[in-house]
Image (tube, rainbow, N blue to C red; front, top):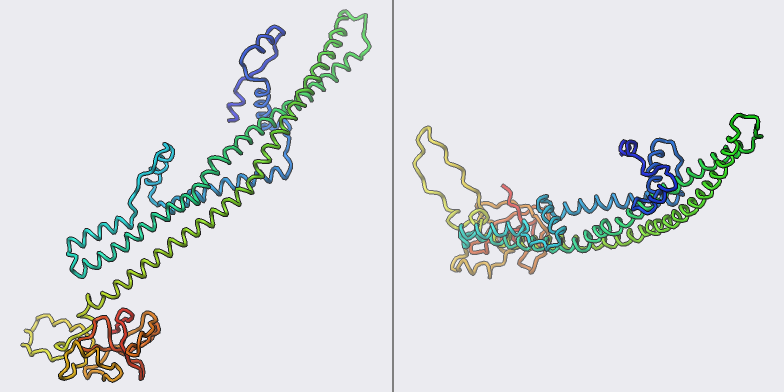
Length: 430
């Protein structure tokens, strides 16, 4: 930039009276523009004085620049948060610039839900795996819909005001600041011109006040000095008039720019309100996600005993001794140990196993002779009636099963207390 200004030819020159009349009728830029460029170059080179703004005005400028820079960074990072895919962000930017509606895009959660539903159909919606895929897929679909609503709300309440500031108010401020800069350059150029004119006038006056030597071979030098003094006096008057005009223009533009810069305080208040709305939208979004996952956890917990019934609850046949088999030949692999199961209390004689649980008092049940298992409580549980046992997280229990019991329940013992406990709240220990 500096090299271009140094090598650029000046747009003004000294002309005769006839040439001056021709230039005044042309469409050339006013001389102030040329003086401003020259003033700017000389300031960069340290050859000209510069009008300094007051400290309050400088603070307003610094505050405005800080607001603009941080608003840009917050806006860009919020866009990354809401849309991590850079290609999607570029696409949305192009649609916005073309003033076209952004097409609806499937969220990642909704896409995952679609894949899980298709997989469940292939594996069989009636199988345990297929049922679980359907439940989890539905939860993912709800999460995706909540994410879509959150993105839409955040874009309206938070991103749009930030963009409006950068593309509206800030552009106006930047434009007026450029105008103020030009007015300041014109003012300093007028000051420099007046200073030079006064110096030349003083020199010409000194020469004109000297006693003329009529014996000089060229006596007309006295007349020329007097004429030069009169010309510089006129130049000083013109420079003073231009300086007053430039000062007026500079003061008017400085006041306009000052009012715009002081409006940054209102911008901060508006952005603060938008920030509160963004936090509220984000809080609502995460609360919905938490609720959906709790519901999914309960659904999966209720079907856990059915899916893993062979692991959590044994049957009467499992307590009978295994039939004797021939010893494996030498060199053959040893059989894997049997998976431990919950010991089962034998059914009461003469009573169907399906009815035993409904009439049997858990406090009267004795532990099976085959032994019991230990379990750790995962969550707090409040007993619904006297047949259930209230649980506290992280406590240890002794558990076993009754024939015909709901696979979601076990008999738990804690000291002298007994009662039914839900399987989903337990972690069986080996």
